[in-house]
Length: 432
Image (cartoon, rainbow, N blue to C red; front, side, top):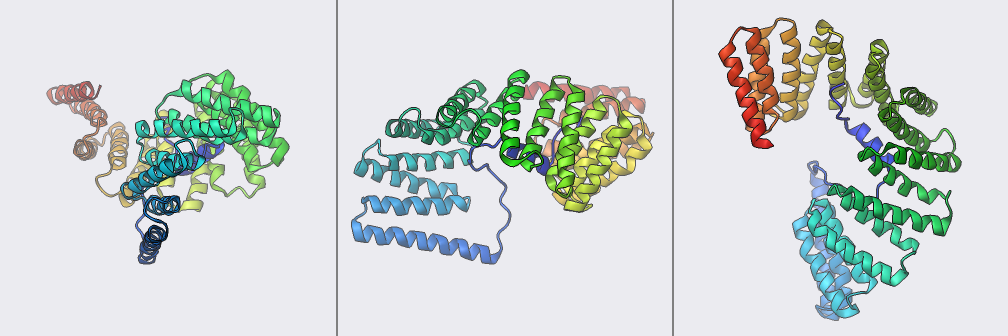
């Protein structure tokens, strides 16, 4: 299956499965309604007034002013106004350092807030020294083996992972796990997040034996804590199945995915997190060339996505993209064509005419049309896709040009084919 990008529901399921520390991830803000905008403006007005009132009552450098500055910064941060929030966090930090000392826990709180602000903006280099300083303050205050260090250690580990510093992230999660084991025992429910975070990192590094052992521990804890048919168990089963599949243990992976799917069915079956095991089973069956079984799973996933999100949703379109790939693998181009056309229609409506997803859909449709001898239609679609990719300055323009080169070969246009291939090579050399 060529399209491995999971749609938002599956991504959400995976994020939940590894129980990351609660650092907000950057998101594309949705437009605010007038009422929401009014509420935001009122929140800022009240927070600013609280700062002014504190300054008048206590002086501009009093620690109570810092408290209100922190709150004002948080209001801006929640609104996504990061540039507005930063100076207020910094001013609060300066006041607290001067009033309370550089190693006071309140200073650590402001440092953590400032670090989170940088993290949300993906300013990882700025966030790292801030988080490290906050951790040092908390270590000094609580001791090196305090449970209060688990959250800052996990937070710093997530930052390291975001920078792809996996070895450093593993060390931090291992330390957090060791603290929890020492304080709580080896089977306490609070170990779960450390175990799953570590498993995720080992899986990213291809260290499947380590990931397997950690997820199995987490699974046992979840079964004991929540029961064998809980959503938490289902998520652990899904992730363990992914590890088994990566190890080539397809039968074991299938067994776990079927169990995860059975749990979904017992709890109603029409929940978003039921999509992930269905999708993974489809991928597993396809890798084993069990195409009818894979197709059945894709149809099941599509029916559920259409029910949850609507027949013209991007989530449904992404499943259809995978069904198109499955049909192409089997040489079933007649069946693939209307589905590829439907994907394009849905994504044009969802994203507009010049989005990268449209270029991908046009290219996929053109590849089907080429196999069916619809070369004129394919050429038109590929030229449109190329215009989109070049307009977005995307390296994916090379993929479109490769497909155009193949098309020109089919048309007997050797010179144009060579020119398209040369342009593709030039783009790749520029990006690499």
